[in-house]
Amino acid sequence: MTRDPFRRQRRRVLQLALGAMLAPALPLRVWAQPRFDRNPFTLGVASGSPLPDSVVLWTRLAPDPLDGGGMPPAAVELAWEVARDEGFRDIVRRGTVLARSELAHSVRVEAGGLEPARWYWYRFTAGNAASPAGRTRTAPAPGARVDRLRFSIASCQQYEQGWYAAHRHMAAEDLDLVVFLGDYIYESSWGRDHVRKHEAAEPYTLEQYRNRYACYKSDPDLQRSHAAAPWLVTWDDHEVDNDYADDRSEDLDPDFLARRAAAYQAYYEHMPLRPGAAPQGPAMRLYDRCEWGALTTFFVLDDRQYRSHQACPRPGRGGSNVAVDCAERLDSDRTLLGAGQERWLHEGLAASGARWNVIAQQTLMAQLERGTGEQRAFWTDGWDGYPAARARLLDFIAGRRIANPVVVSGDVHCTWIADLKRDFDDPRSPVVASEFCGTSISAQGPAVKRVAEWRARNPHLHYGNGWKRGYLALELDERRCVARLRALDSEKQQDSGIATLGTWAVESGRPGPRKA
Ligand SMILES: [Fe+2]
Image 1: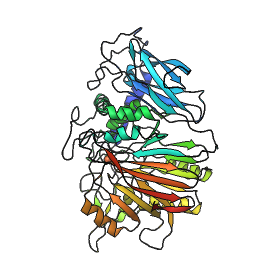
Image 2: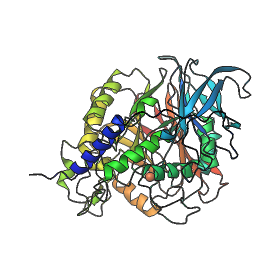
Image 3: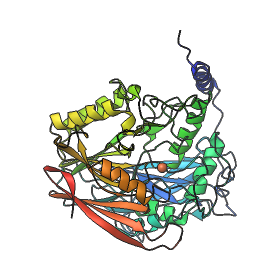
Image 4: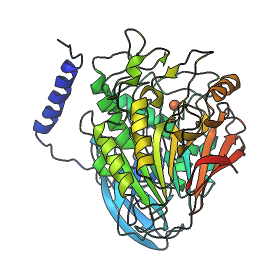
Protein backbone atom coordinates (compact mmCIF):
# COMPACT_ATOMS: atom_id res chain seq x y z
CA MET A 1 0.00 0.00 0.00
CA THR A 2 1.36 3.42 -0.85
CA ARG A 3 1.32 5.89 1.95
CA ASP A 4 0.04 9.33 0.99
CA PRO A 5 2.13 11.77 3.07
CA PHE A 6 -0.13 14.68 2.17
CA ARG A 7 -3.47 13.17 3.16
CA ARG A 8 -3.59 14.85 6.55
CA GLN A 9 -2.59 18.13 4.98
CA ARG A 10 -5.19 17.91 2.19
CA ARG A 11 -7.86 17.19 4.80
CA ARG A 12 -6.76 20.22 6.81
CA VAL A 13 -6.84 22.53 3.79
CA LEU A 14 -10.31 21.22 2.94
CA GLN A 15 -11.45 21.89 6.49
CA LEU A 16 -10.10 25.43 6.30
CA ALA A 17 -11.87 26.03 2.98
CA LEU A 18 -15.14 24.60 4.28
CA GLY A 19 -14.85 26.67 7.46
CA ALA A 20 -14.45 29.83 5.40
CA MET A 21 -17.47 28.94 3.26
CA LEU A 22 -19.70 28.19 6.25
CA ALA A 23 -18.63 31.17 8.38
CA PRO A 24 -21.44 33.73 8.77
CA ALA A 25 -20.85 36.79 6.59
CA LEU A 26 -19.93 39.68 8.87
CA PRO A 27 -21.32 43.11 8.05
CA LEU A 28 -18.61 45.05 6.24
CA ARG A 29 -17.24 47.92 8.29
CA VAL A 30 -16.10 50.86 6.19
CA TRP A 31 -13.80 53.57 7.46
CA ALA A 32 -15.56 56.59 5.94
CA GLN A 33 -13.49 59.67 5.05
CA PRO A 34 -10.20 58.27 6.32
CA ARG A 35 -7.44 60.61 7.39
CA PHE A 36 -3.95 59.22 7.20
CA ASP A 37 -1.15 60.70 9.28
CA ARG A 38 1.38 58.64 7.29
CA ASN A 39 1.51 57.93 3.55
CA PRO A 40 -0.52 54.73 2.93
CA PHE A 41 0.76 54.36 -0.68
CA THR A 42 4.20 53.12 0.39
CA LEU A 43 4.18 50.25 -2.13
CA GLY A 44 3.48 52.34 -5.21
CA VAL A 45 1.12 51.38 -8.00
CA ALA A 46 1.17 48.78 -10.75
CA SER A 47 -0.74 47.72 -13.82
CA GLY A 48 -0.91 44.55 -15.86
CA SER A 49 -2.78 41.90 -17.83
CA PRO A 50 -3.58 44.31 -20.70
CA LEU A 51 -6.46 43.57 -23.07
CA PRO A 52 -7.51 45.69 -26.08
CA ASP A 53 -10.16 47.49 -24.00
CA SER A 54 -8.98 47.19 -20.40
CA VAL A 55 -6.06 46.90 -18.05
CA VAL A 56 -5.72 45.95 -14.38
CA LEU A 57 -4.68 48.73 -11.98
CA TRP A 58 -3.22 47.84 -8.61
CA THR A 59 -2.26 49.44 -5.32
CA ARG A 60 -2.29 48.61 -1.62
CA LEU A 61 -2.81 50.76 1.46
CA ALA A 62 0.07 50.05 3.85
CA PRO A 63 1.20 52.95 6.07
CA ASP A 64 3.33 50.48 8.06
CA PRO A 65 4.32 48.13 5.24
CA LEU A 66 6.84 45.82 6.93
CA ASP A 67 4.64 45.03 9.93
CA GLY A 68 1.28 43.87 8.65
CA GLY A 69 0.48 47.06 6.74
CA GLY A 70 -0.70 49.20 9.63
CA MET A 71 -4.32 49.49 8.54
CA PRO A 72 -7.37 49.07 10.82
CA PRO A 73 -9.61 46.06 10.08
CA ALA A 74 -12.23 48.27 8.38
CA ALA A 75 -12.51 48.57 4.61
CA VAL A 76 -11.50 51.84 2.96
CA GLU A 77 -12.90 53.32 -0.23
CA LEU A 78 -10.40 54.41 -2.86
CA ALA A 79 -11.14 56.54 -5.87
CA TRP A 80 -9.29 55.81 -9.12
CA GLU A 81 -9.00 57.64 -12.40
CA VAL A 82 -7.56 56.93 -15.83
CA ALA A 83 -6.47 59.73 -18.14
CA ARG A 84 -5.21 60.04 -21.67
CA ASP A 85 -2.50 62.46 -20.56
CA GLU A 86 0.16 62.59 -17.91
CA GLY A 87 -1.32 65.80 -16.44
CA PHE A 88 -4.75 64.15 -15.87
CA ARG A 89 -6.60 66.86 -17.80
CA ASP A 90 -8.30 64.35 -20.11
CA ILE A 91 -9.80 61.80 -17.70
CA VAL A 92 -11.62 58.99 -19.52
CA ARG A 93 -12.58 56.63 -16.69
CA ARG A 94 -13.03 56.97 -12.94
CA GLY A 95 -14.60 54.96 -10.16
CA THR A 96 -14.28 53.73 -6.62
CA VAL A 97 -13.13 50.45 -5.14
CA LEU A 98 -13.04 49.06 -1.61
CA ALA A 99 -9.73 48.06 -0.05
CA ARG A 100 -10.58 45.23 2.33
CA SER A 101 -8.57 43.74 5.13
CA GLU A 102 -9.11 40.18 3.77
CA LEU A 103 -6.87 41.23 0.85
CA ALA A 104 -4.44 43.21 3.03
CA HIS A 105 -6.10 46.43 1.76
CA SER A 106 -4.85 45.74 -1.73
CA VAL A 107 -7.11 46.69 -4.63
CA ARG A 108 -7.31 45.71 -8.27
CA VAL A 109 -9.44 47.61 -10.73
CA GLU A 110 -10.29 46.24 -14.16
CA ALA A 111 -10.43 49.61 -15.89
CA GLY A 112 -12.57 48.95 -18.97
CA GLY A 113 -13.97 50.88 -21.91
CA LEU A 114 -10.49 51.93 -23.04
CA GLU A 115 -9.19 52.27 -26.60
CA PRO A 116 -6.79 49.64 -27.96
CA ALA A 117 -3.05 50.24 -28.36
CA ARG A 118 -2.96 53.43 -26.34
CA TRP A 119 -0.99 54.82 -23.42
CA TYR A 120 -2.93 55.86 -20.32
CA TRP A 121 -2.07 57.33 -16.92
CA TYR A 122 -3.77 56.30 -13.68
CA ARG A 123 -3.77 57.15 -9.95
CA PHE A 124 -5.66 56.49 -6.73
CA THR A 125 -6.80 58.61 -3.79
CA ALA A 126 -7.95 57.53 -0.32
CA GLY A 127 -9.16 60.18 2.10
CA ASN A 128 -6.43 62.78 2.35
CA ALA A 129 -3.81 60.63 0.58
CA ALA A 130 -2.94 60.38 -3.12
CA SER A 131 -0.91 57.68 -4.85
CA PRO A 132 1.86 58.32 -7.33
CA ALA A 133 0.67 58.18 -10.94
CA GLY A 134 1.43 55.21 -13.16
CA ARG A 135 1.59 54.83 -16.92
CA THR A 136 0.06 51.86 -18.69
CA ARG A 137 -1.22 50.77 -22.05
CA THR A 138 -3.84 48.58 -23.64
CA ALA A 139 -3.12 45.78 -26.09
CA PRO A 140 -3.81 46.34 -29.80
CA ALA A 141 -7.19 45.28 -31.21
CA PRO A 142 -7.50 41.56 -32.08
CA GLY A 143 -5.77 40.86 -35.39
CA ALA A 144 -4.62 44.49 -35.77
CA ARG A 145 -1.42 45.21 -37.63
CA VAL A 146 1.29 46.22 -35.16
CA ASP A 147 4.52 47.79 -36.37
CA ARG A 148 6.57 46.83 -33.36
CA LEU A 149 6.41 45.59 -29.79
CA ARG A 150 9.08 46.31 -27.21
CA PHE A 151 9.19 44.33 -24.00
CA SER A 152 11.68 43.21 -21.40
CA ILE A 153 12.10 39.91 -19.64
CA ALA A 154 13.20 40.01 -16.02
CA SER A 155 13.37 37.59 -13.10
CA CYS A 156 15.09 36.67 -9.84
CA GLN A 157 15.33 39.79 -7.71
CA GLN A 158 16.90 38.53 -4.48
CA TYR A 159 16.62 41.68 -2.36
CA GLU A 160 19.73 41.19 -0.27
CA GLN A 161 22.16 40.43 -3.08
CA GLY A 162 21.73 43.63 -5.04
CA TRP A 163 20.00 46.93 -5.67
CA TYR A 164 17.29 47.23 -8.29
CA ALA A 165 19.18 49.56 -10.64
CA ALA A 166 18.09 47.23 -13.46
CA HIS A 167 14.49 48.24 -12.80
CA ARG A 168 15.37 51.92 -12.94
CA HIS A 169 16.98 51.43 -16.35
CA MET A 170 14.07 49.30 -17.55
CA ALA A 171 11.66 52.08 -16.58
CA ALA A 172 13.65 54.48 -18.77
CA GLU A 173 13.57 52.17 -21.83
CA ASP A 174 10.08 53.10 -23.06
CA LEU A 175 8.88 49.50 -23.13
CA ASP A 176 5.33 48.48 -24.03
CA LEU A 177 5.39 45.65 -21.53
CA VAL A 178 7.48 44.02 -18.81
CA VAL A 179 7.34 40.23 -18.69
CA PHE A 180 8.37 39.02 -15.23
CA LEU A 181 9.32 35.34 -15.17
CA GLY A 182 9.43 34.53 -11.48
CA ASP A 183 11.34 34.80 -8.22
CA TYR A 184 9.78 38.18 -7.51
CA ILE A 185 10.54 37.56 -3.84
CA TYR A 186 12.93 35.12 -2.23
CA GLU A 187 11.72 33.28 0.83
CA SER A 188 15.21 32.71 2.19
CA SER A 189 18.33 34.69 2.90
CA TRP A 190 21.37 33.40 1.01
CA GLY A 191 24.27 34.42 -1.19
CA ARG A 192 27.36 36.62 -0.95
CA ASP A 193 27.96 40.32 -0.30
CA HIS A 194 24.55 41.46 0.82
CA VAL A 195 23.75 45.13 0.23
CA ARG A 196 20.66 45.04 2.51
CA LYS A 197 18.64 42.58 4.59
CA HIS A 198 15.18 41.06 4.48
CA GLU A 199 12.69 42.44 6.97
CA ALA A 200 12.44 39.14 8.86
CA ALA A 201 13.20 35.42 8.77
CA GLU A 202 11.74 32.98 6.21
CA PRO A 203 7.94 33.40 5.75
CA TYR A 204 5.44 30.59 6.36
CA THR A 205 2.19 32.42 7.20
CA LEU A 206 0.09 34.81 5.13
CA GLU A 207 1.09 37.76 7.31
CA GLN A 208 4.78 36.88 6.91
CA TYR A 209 4.50 36.57 3.10
CA ARG A 210 2.66 39.91 2.99
CA ASN A 211 5.53 41.51 4.88
CA ARG A 212 8.03 39.97 2.45
CA TYR A 213 6.18 41.43 -0.56
CA ALA A 214 6.03 44.78 1.24
CA CYS A 215 9.78 44.63 1.83
CA TYR A 216 10.49 44.05 -1.89
CA LYS A 217 7.85 46.46 -3.14
CA SER A 218 9.15 49.26 -0.89
CA ASP A 219 12.09 49.59 -3.29
CA PRO A 220 11.70 52.86 -5.26
CA ASP A 221 13.30 51.48 -8.45
CA LEU A 222 10.96 48.49 -8.50
CA GLN A 223 8.04 50.91 -8.01
CA ARG A 224 9.35 52.98 -10.95
CA SER A 225 9.41 49.90 -13.15
CA HIS A 226 5.81 49.00 -12.25
CA ALA A 227 4.66 52.59 -12.81
CA ALA A 228 6.24 52.79 -16.29
CA ALA A 229 4.45 49.97 -18.15
CA PRO A 230 1.99 47.10 -17.67
CA TRP A 231 3.43 43.78 -16.53
CA LEU A 232 2.69 40.17 -17.41
CA VAL A 233 3.71 37.97 -14.51
CA THR A 234 4.34 34.41 -13.57
CA TRP A 235 6.02 32.90 -10.55
CA ASP A 236 8.77 30.39 -9.98
CA ASP A 237 9.66 28.52 -6.79
CA HIS A 238 10.88 31.29 -4.46
CA GLU A 239 7.48 32.95 -4.27
CA VAL A 240 6.71 29.92 -2.06
CA ASP A 241 9.77 27.80 -1.26
CA ASN A 242 12.95 26.73 -3.04
CA ASP A 243 12.47 23.85 -5.49
CA TYR A 244 8.92 22.99 -4.54
CA ALA A 245 7.00 20.77 -6.96
CA ASP A 246 3.21 20.69 -6.82
CA ASP A 247 2.37 19.59 -3.25
CA ARG A 248 5.91 18.66 -2.21
CA SER A 249 8.46 20.97 -0.60
CA GLU A 250 12.20 20.48 -0.60
CA ASP A 251 12.19 19.43 3.07
CA LEU A 252 8.98 17.33 2.77
CA ASP A 253 7.09 19.66 5.11
CA PRO A 254 3.79 17.89 6.01
CA ASP A 255 2.02 21.29 6.19
CA PHE A 256 3.31 22.44 2.84
CA LEU A 257 -0.06 22.92 1.13
CA ALA A 258 -1.16 25.34 3.88
CA ARG A 259 2.09 27.26 3.34
CA ARG A 260 1.54 27.24 -0.42
CA ALA A 261 -2.00 28.61 0.09
CA ALA A 262 -0.60 31.51 2.17
CA ALA A 263 2.11 32.23 -0.40
CA TYR A 264 -0.30 32.13 -3.37
CA GLN A 265 -2.72 34.42 -1.53
CA ALA A 266 0.02 36.99 -0.86
CA TYR A 267 1.19 36.74 -4.49
CA TYR A 268 -2.32 37.42 -5.76
CA GLU A 269 -2.69 40.37 -3.39
CA HIS A 270 0.47 42.02 -4.70
CA MET A 271 0.33 41.44 -8.47
CA PRO A 272 -1.74 43.22 -11.16
CA LEU A 273 -3.63 40.02 -12.06
CA ARG A 274 -7.23 39.68 -13.21
CA PRO A 275 -9.73 38.77 -10.45
CA GLY A 276 -10.17 35.38 -12.16
CA ALA A 277 -6.73 34.45 -10.81
CA ALA A 278 -7.92 34.68 -7.16
CA PRO A 279 -6.68 31.58 -5.32
CA GLN A 280 -8.96 28.90 -3.89
CA GLY A 281 -6.98 27.57 -0.93
CA PRO A 282 -3.72 26.18 -2.29
CA ALA A 283 -4.84 26.35 -5.96
CA MET A 284 -4.47 29.35 -8.24
CA ARG A 285 -4.95 29.60 -12.00
CA LEU A 286 -2.02 31.70 -13.17
CA TYR A 287 -1.26 30.51 -16.70
CA ASP A 288 -2.75 32.82 -19.27
CA ARG A 289 -2.51 34.18 -22.79
CA CYS A 290 -1.99 37.79 -23.92
CA GLU A 291 -2.52 38.77 -27.54
CA TRP A 292 -0.74 41.75 -29.03
CA GLY A 293 -2.67 42.24 -32.28
CA ALA A 294 -1.53 40.13 -35.21
CA LEU A 295 2.11 40.47 -34.19
CA THR A 296 2.50 38.42 -31.02
CA THR A 297 0.71 36.06 -28.69
CA PHE A 298 2.24 35.48 -25.27
CA PHE A 299 1.62 32.16 -23.52
CA VAL A 300 2.48 32.72 -19.86
CA LEU A 301 3.05 29.38 -18.15
CA ASP A 302 3.08 28.04 -14.59
CA ASP A 303 5.62 25.24 -14.28
CA ARG A 304 5.45 24.84 -10.48
CA GLN A 305 1.89 24.07 -9.43
CA TYR A 306 1.19 20.99 -11.53
CA ARG A 307 4.61 19.42 -12.12
CA SER A 308 5.69 15.87 -11.31
CA HIS A 309 7.96 15.69 -8.28
CA GLN A 310 11.66 16.01 -9.09
CA ALA A 311 13.30 12.80 -10.22
CA CYS A 312 15.97 11.25 -8.02
CA PRO A 313 16.02 13.88 -5.25
CA ARG A 314 18.72 13.73 -2.58
CA PRO A 315 18.00 10.87 -0.16
CA GLY A 316 15.25 11.72 2.32
CA ARG A 317 14.43 15.02 0.67
CA GLY A 318 12.44 16.51 -2.21
CA GLY A 319 13.81 19.15 -4.57
CA SER A 320 16.59 19.24 -7.07
CA ASN A 321 19.67 17.20 -7.64
CA VAL A 322 22.41 17.15 -10.22
CA ALA A 323 21.64 13.61 -11.27
CA VAL A 324 24.06 11.30 -13.04
CA ASP A 325 22.27 7.98 -13.41
CA CYS A 326 18.58 8.64 -12.98
CA ALA A 327 16.28 6.46 -15.05
CA GLU A 328 13.21 8.05 -13.44
CA ARG A 329 14.11 11.35 -15.12
CA LEU A 330 13.36 9.77 -18.49
CA ASP A 331 9.86 8.48 -17.63
CA SER A 332 7.53 9.31 -20.49
CA ASP A 333 4.66 10.33 -18.22
CA ARG A 334 6.59 13.02 -16.34
CA THR A 335 5.08 16.46 -16.71
CA LEU A 336 6.25 20.00 -15.98
CA LEU A 337 3.00 21.79 -16.86
CA GLY A 338 0.37 19.20 -15.91
CA ALA A 339 -1.98 17.64 -18.43
CA GLY A 340 -4.56 20.46 -18.37
CA GLN A 341 -2.09 23.27 -18.96
CA GLU A 342 -0.22 21.24 -21.60
CA ARG A 343 -3.48 20.71 -23.53
CA TRP A 344 -4.36 24.40 -23.16
CA LEU A 345 -0.93 25.39 -24.49
CA HIS A 346 -1.12 23.03 -27.49
CA GLU A 347 -4.63 24.21 -28.37
CA GLY A 348 -3.64 27.86 -28.02
CA LEU A 349 -0.52 27.46 -30.14
CA ALA A 350 -2.45 25.57 -32.82
CA ALA A 351 -5.14 28.27 -32.93
CA SER A 352 -2.75 31.24 -32.84
CA GLY A 353 -2.64 33.44 -35.94
CA ALA A 354 0.18 35.59 -34.55
CA ARG A 355 3.44 36.21 -36.39
CA TRP A 356 5.43 35.46 -33.20
CA ASN A 357 4.41 33.02 -30.48
CA VAL A 358 6.25 33.87 -27.28
CA ILE A 359 6.24 31.19 -24.59
CA ALA A 360 6.98 33.03 -21.34
CA GLN A 361 7.99 30.57 -18.64
CA GLN A 362 10.25 30.09 -15.66
CA THR A 363 13.36 28.12 -16.43
CA LEU A 364 15.88 27.26 -19.15
CA MET A 365 14.24 24.98 -21.71
CA ALA A 366 17.37 24.05 -23.67
CA GLN A 367 19.27 21.00 -22.45
CA LEU A 368 22.22 21.90 -20.23
CA GLU A 369 24.31 18.79 -19.75
CA ARG A 370 26.68 19.56 -16.88
CA GLY A 371 28.75 16.45 -16.26
CA THR A 372 32.50 15.95 -16.43
CA GLY A 373 34.46 13.85 -18.91
CA GLU A 374 32.37 10.94 -20.15
CA GLN A 375 29.91 11.23 -17.29
CA ARG A 376 26.73 13.09 -18.14
CA ALA A 377 24.72 14.94 -15.49
CA PHE A 378 21.49 16.96 -15.46
CA TRP A 379 19.89 19.35 -12.98
CA THR A 380 16.51 17.85 -12.16
CA ASP A 381 14.57 20.98 -11.16
CA GLY A 382 14.61 22.49 -14.67
CA TRP A 383 13.33 21.14 -17.99
CA ASP A 384 16.28 18.71 -17.91
CA GLY A 385 14.40 16.88 -15.16
CA TYR A 386 11.41 16.54 -17.49
CA PRO A 387 12.86 15.67 -20.92
CA ALA A 388 9.75 13.80 -22.11
CA ALA A 389 7.58 16.85 -21.40
CA ARG A 390 10.06 19.06 -23.28
CA ALA A 391 10.08 16.68 -26.24
CA ARG A 392 6.27 16.63 -26.33
CA LEU A 393 6.17 20.43 -26.56
CA LEU A 394 8.98 20.78 -29.12
CA ASP A 395 7.58 17.92 -31.23
CA PHE A 396 4.20 19.63 -31.19
CA ILE A 397 5.74 22.96 -32.24
CA ALA A 398 7.67 21.30 -35.07
CA GLY A 399 4.86 18.98 -36.18
CA ARG A 400 2.24 21.71 -36.30
CA ARG A 401 4.62 24.27 -37.79
CA ILE A 402 3.80 26.86 -35.13
CA ALA A 403 4.82 30.30 -36.42
CA ASN A 404 8.04 31.72 -34.99
CA PRO A 405 8.14 30.14 -31.55
CA VAL A 406 10.32 32.07 -29.10
CA VAL A 407 10.77 30.78 -25.56
CA VAL A 408 11.74 33.32 -22.88
CA SER A 409 13.04 32.07 -19.54
CA GLY A 410 14.52 33.00 -16.16
CA ASP A 411 15.39 31.13 -12.96
CA VAL A 412 19.02 30.15 -13.63
CA HIS A 413 20.63 33.60 -13.07
CA CYS A 414 22.49 33.29 -16.34
CA THR A 415 21.85 34.71 -19.78
CA TRP A 416 21.59 31.91 -22.33
CA ILE A 417 20.94 32.32 -26.05
CA ALA A 418 19.95 28.91 -27.37
CA ASP A 419 18.62 26.80 -30.19
CA LEU A 420 15.77 24.51 -29.15
CA LYS A 421 15.98 21.16 -30.90
CA ARG A 422 14.03 17.95 -31.01
CA ASP A 423 17.16 16.04 -30.04
CA PHE A 424 19.85 18.10 -28.32
CA ASP A 425 22.34 15.23 -28.51
CA ASP A 426 22.17 15.04 -32.30
CA PRO A 427 24.01 17.91 -34.03
CA ARG A 428 21.93 17.29 -37.18
CA SER A 429 18.62 17.54 -35.36
CA PRO A 430 16.74 20.56 -36.71
CA VAL A 431 16.30 23.78 -34.73
CA VAL A 432 12.59 24.16 -34.06
CA ALA A 433 12.46 27.21 -31.77
CA SER A 434 14.62 29.96 -30.25
CA GLU A 435 15.30 30.61 -26.60
CA PHE A 436 16.30 33.79 -24.75
CA CYS A 437 16.95 33.13 -21.08
CA GLY A 438 17.41 36.33 -19.08
CA THR A 439 20.01 36.85 -16.41
CA SER A 440 18.64 38.07 -13.05
CA ILE A 441 17.78 41.46 -11.64
CA SER A 442 20.05 40.89 -8.63
CA ALA A 443 20.47 37.19 -7.72
CA GLN A 444 23.99 35.82 -8.09
CA GLY A 445 24.79 33.43 -10.91
CA PRO A 446 27.36 30.88 -12.06
CA ALA A 447 31.02 31.81 -12.54
CA VAL A 448 32.82 32.36 -15.85
CA LYS A 449 34.60 28.98 -15.71
CA ARG A 450 31.43 26.95 -15.14
CA VAL A 451 29.59 28.71 -17.94
CA ALA A 452 32.52 28.07 -20.32
CA GLU A 453 32.56 24.35 -19.39
CA TRP A 454 28.80 24.06 -19.93
CA ARG A 455 28.95 25.83 -23.28
CA ALA A 456 31.68 23.47 -24.48
CA ARG A 457 29.43 20.47 -23.70
CA ASN A 458 26.24 22.02 -25.14
CA PRO A 459 26.85 23.44 -28.64
CA HIS A 460 23.22 24.55 -29.00
CA LEU A 461 23.93 27.20 -26.32
CA HIS A 462 25.36 30.04 -28.40
CA TYR A 463 26.11 32.42 -25.56
CA GLY A 464 26.17 32.28 -21.77
CA ASN A 465 26.83 34.89 -19.10
CA GLY A 466 26.25 34.19 -15.42
CA TRP A 467 28.22 37.05 -13.89
CA LYS A 468 26.31 40.11 -15.12
CA ARG A 469 22.94 41.17 -13.69
CA GLY A 470 20.25 42.97 -15.67
CA TYR A 471 17.49 42.06 -18.12
CA LEU A 472 16.83 41.40 -21.79
CA ALA A 473 15.09 44.02 -23.95
CA LEU A 474 13.29 42.48 -26.92
CA GLU A 475 11.87 44.19 -29.96
CA LEU A 476 9.60 42.39 -32.42
CA ASP A 477 8.38 43.44 -35.82
CA GLU A 478 7.14 41.43 -38.77
CA ARG A 479 10.64 40.52 -39.88
CA ARG A 480 12.73 40.09 -36.77
CA CYS A 481 12.90 39.50 -33.06
CA VAL A 482 15.90 41.35 -31.64
CA ALA A 483 17.16 40.89 -28.07
CA ARG A 484 19.54 43.32 -26.41
CA LEU A 485 21.43 41.97 -23.41
CA ARG A 486 21.30 44.77 -20.84
CA ALA A 487 23.93 44.40 -18.11
CA LEU A 488 24.58 46.52 -15.02
CA ASP A 489 28.07 47.72 -14.16
CA SER A 490 27.35 46.33 -10.68
CA GLU A 491 24.19 45.33 -8.85
CA LYS A 492 26.04 46.25 -5.64
CA GLN A 493 25.83 49.95 -6.59
CA GLN A 494 22.44 51.59 -6.23
CA ASP A 495 23.26 54.11 -8.99
CA SER A 496 24.92 51.60 -11.33
CA GLY A 497 25.14 52.37 -15.02
CA ILE A 498 24.10 49.89 -17.67
CA ALA A 499 25.45 48.75 -21.04
CA THR A 500 24.43 46.46 -23.86
CA LEU A 501 26.63 43.35 -23.85
CA GLY A 502 25.44 42.07 -27.18
CA THR A 503 22.50 41.85 -29.57
CA TRP A 504 20.97 38.64 -30.92
CA ALA A 505 18.23 38.29 -33.52
CA VAL A 506 15.83 35.71 -34.91
CA GLU A 507 14.59 36.19 -38.47
CA SER A 508 10.94 35.40 -39.10
CA GLY A 509 10.61 31.92 -40.60
CA ARG A 510 14.12 30.89 -39.56
CA PRO A 511 14.34 29.55 -35.99
CA GLY A 512 17.54 29.98 -34.02
CA PRO A 513 19.10 33.19 -32.65
CA ARG A 514 22.09 34.69 -34.44
CA LYS A 515 24.44 37.45 -33.37
CA ALA A 516 23.20 40.74 -34.82
FE1 LIG B 1 15.91 32.70 -9.05
